[in-house]
Image (cartoon, rainbow, N blue to C red; front, side):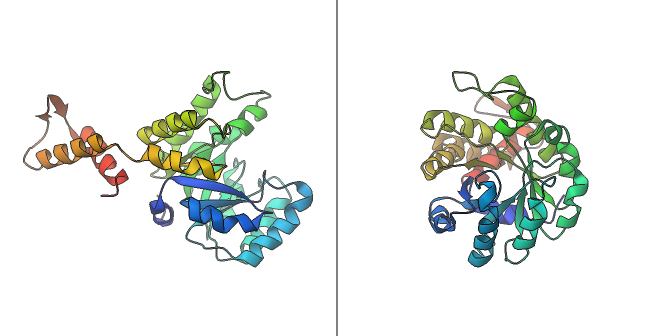
Length: 275
């Protein structure tokens, strides 16, 4: 089930902001705006800039409590190079891009690993990845997933996910939950669509995701607001938990049947409210 390192890291909040690894000057601003930063050595960095990005990571030696480093896929030569650079820093939370083969994560026992399931194989292997003790969380990615299938778009014209993306999202969340791990929702690539982002983040929070990743500072507050329960829900949760103290088994509260699953929902609302 892991040793709790991920839970400690992410008590800061639900908005995780990607930062290009070759733009280290953006890291401090990202940490001012977001709850944690994902310093990206993979897709955000062109092949000819990856070596410089690794050098920048070592030179910066960023805050290990609030920084995650996304490394390149284990099937690429850059994976070992990224890990060699990471070992020269204090950062011990690593996001592995295009995670698929559990054996490829064997050498990461000293890290808190976020397995990024963003290929067809990765999604199908999410359960096996979640079982690994060093894996503290799973994340999924829509665009790479659809590309791995030979598709061209993860979304319909109205912005909603296609069924294959929705299935992948659910599989990754279920795999994480089955082994007591956290799950992180994918980025919303339409930066201007804050309404769509808010709807997705609200659904993510209600479904059990611990965080949502984002690619622009302007998305952070929308995510935070979506994960924060509304006052009426918090008041109801407090009330039902207080009522439960005097009850045994199933009981009725404000016209609704209350049993242990509902009480667990209420505890989650209170926890998300920071109480």
